[in-house]
Image 1 (tube, rainbow over the protein chains, first blue to last red):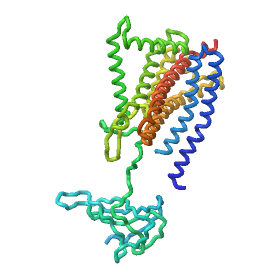
Image 2: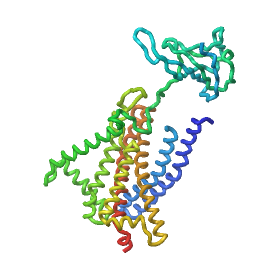
Image 3: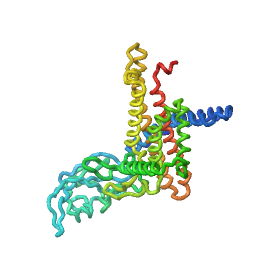
Length: 75
Length: 354
């Protein structure tokens, strides 16, 4: 394998493996948020704010993987 | 002539093309009357097919020099073949040079660049395209701010209604984090500025023409504008400003001794290591702030570029809506996180415990 192939494989592997955990986390947060809103619809705005923040945190991990993949691919 | 020192070296193979690097002497000056003056050494790539194993032409066994070399008065000094070829003497090499075929230097795919491209220099300071659009965003915000400030009225009309409603919402959101209205009003300018600046920066990448209008230079295409948040320098700058501001406000709220005591605590070893962790987390915040925003916006840019490249009409529309949403959410997240950090750092540990 020459260096270009290694780069392609590394970029693909980084984003593929790196998105597994955030995907699970975001799904989990969303399901818990929906649960909470269902139980207490009055608190929906507060729950949504907290939910979006938590999702952004979980998503950040995927974004780190993406940035690394892009750096591997383009730099 | 000069071909006596023909040597072959093994480098790499790209598809089934072989590349031959000819070290050449190129005239450094061309004159209108066709004469040349001075020579400089340069390597020029010459491509030839590996399938056609034609013998080198000429009785002397010399390789055919590309036509363009003749026209520019280029002389081959020595040749390096970049492939698995046994070292041969100059007379025995099997190759066919295709005339005027050199590998393409510019790919024809969509233009994606991880870092902002330099447009021009002021002194030794490079001005990149994202810096240029950052200035446009700043000018827009300042002009809009000045404009609305002049038109402020006690009884709101038109736009002022909208902004007062937004301000009320923002203050309400800040109340829920900070706990009291007085604090919210105190920190609103910082948080709202961060939010607006990041929001407009995120959205500025979606304006038609940003990233597509540019200059064709010697290094290929260079866009004139680029979303500021799609440049790591910008996000890093905003993140640094935010963290420094948060720490400064904490020092103002608590006093220097109390704030520094969070990081350097010598009462017992556990507090000491917790303090060191706090210190590290301050730097982690900067990194996570900047990479989150950069990653989101740059990924959006790449997504839009790729979809527009694959299907130019209709299909990119939902992605544009998605990017408008992502730009808003990321600005909100940036401001909210700054707010949360501010809220936690302007409260002393003693007050927290009670």
